[in-house]
Image (cartoon, one colour):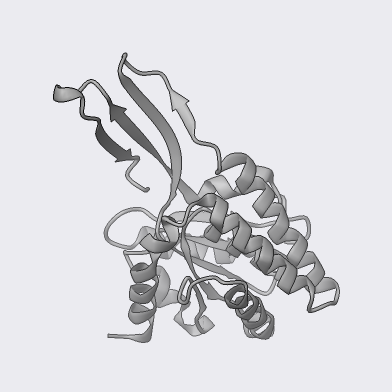
Length: 237
């Protein structure tokens, strides 16, 4: 087993527990993370902390509510969100600490695990972000960093739910092609190609790109009056 395969296995092993933590608990944890990041000082970490808080606000608005849907008499139907699995968070030389923080925060808030793969010039700052995430109480293996050299092997892994990338168009196309060549289910590619303004990462609905919708049906008219529960997902991809 390669190191990349082991990293994906470890992320998948903790994913369901993280996904079941619930949006509200994840928001609370990531707010604590933003406080820890801001304490490092400097413009870069201050901007990264602000981006994390922004993603928390978006999650509170878009991910936290459970929507009731109409159904037959004696039946309740609820629409809620769930994570998809494991996402790679990456970028090229245009990737900033703020973009990285936004991508990782959105991935985690939506109930996914993250594998961070960044250029060498951003590696130390990425390690600092991940260290603060652990200090804030995030479970081990929920987010980990891997060397840039492992990106190709990672994106070829059919178990990945998707890739969040900030990069120039050429790099985005290369990653998209590798994802398309995989066997199995299609992976989501969420690409930010405006690193200076972060028009995608900085949009309030960005967190919605990392979720799948699920429905929960409770039928209270079952034989004997016992409630029956049915939960359905959208298939994840």
